[in-house]
Amino acid sequence: MDAAYQHRKSGNCMNSTQAREAARVPPPNHGMHTVNPCPALAAIVRSFTIVETISERTSTLLPETGVLLGIRYSGSAALLRSSSPQEDLPDWSITGIRDSSRRICTSAGGGLIVVNLHETGASRLFAAPVLELYNVTASLRDWLPNPSFEGLQANLSHAHDNRSRIARIEDFLAAQKNTRPPDTMVEAAIRAMRAGRGNIAIARLAQHIGVSQDRFEKRFRREVGTSPKQYCSLLRLRFALNLYQPGRTLTDIAHAAGYYDQSHFIREFRAVTGEPPLKFLRRSQYW
Image 1 (tube, rainbow, N blue to C red):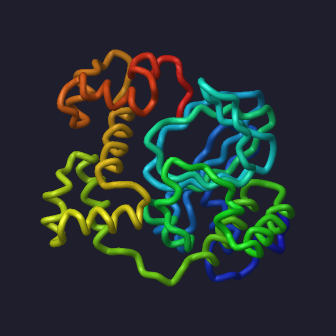
Image 2 (image 1 turned 45 degrees about the vertical axis):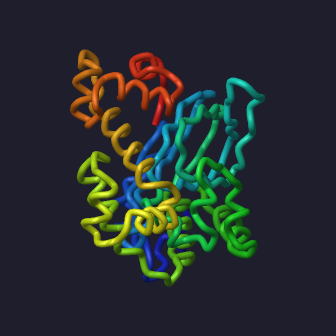
């Protein structure tokens, strides 16, 4: 990493050697590692995930509860489909909240930084309505003003390790933040939904907040990019996956995660992944 960039005094994000070391960015070719964002971006970015592959690898990507930015600095990747030819993915991509998983094949020598945004993070970075990204993966170029995109490309071309790449991405995101304040009603609803692991009645939540259900759902979709019901379904599924361990029954997992019964859990799981839980969990590389 170039020392001049590492020691700059920007006043925004990781502007000291100590701060960068605290991120504990690993050396290359180490698989998958997560890095926390700098404090200035903590309300927008949940984490950075560095994904590096030595050999070709196929993984299943489960739906996230926020928008993802993918910035590829080496190799290539393709979306695999059972009923149509594979689709090459853009090196710089943005992916909205989805209702189903994706299978991605990454080439040998691949390197990618995934920016995992908080639920309302995209609406605080981009001018276009985040709901337009639902079930969509697009080129990041289409979502950024051309000078901004070209500036980030040029800046990253001078980065030679993951510490430097993340520092430059953080500076870019900090500069993209819009001045519109976050919707505190939606933020409060998200906290309640996460606390309940998705097991919460939407009508009752809207009543508690003090707005009609219709108004609440419109504001939620505008800020998050999906409906409150779909968001809660993703939270519940993610929690159920975290409960899985060999020997634990599906009935136990289903009840602990808040599903009505095992059949309800299997039905929702299959709708997202295309497979029953045990078959998926025993053979899939997923994240």
